[in-house]
Length: 96
Image: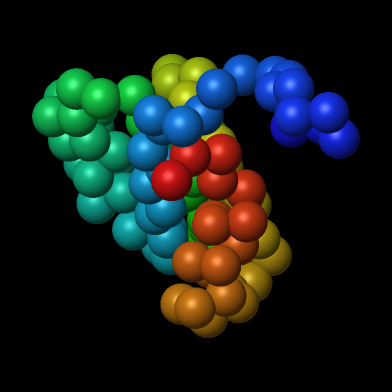
């Protein structure tokens, strides 16, 4: 909203943001993401914060990122801890 009360840009008021932390569990992360897509009818986005996983997990996450345009991945060299990873995801979230 600008200084005159006019709204600009897309309306994210009905968007649900889901934050997932990934840490060396590519298969489990993929199952989680696929379950969300299969069972969530309302508009949503997924922010996946990776905690410095190895190549196999990164490859799995990258494939998910390529498949879904509303899945956003934050790649980290190392873990920022559970709270740090969640906060990072919340920082990038557009919805509620």
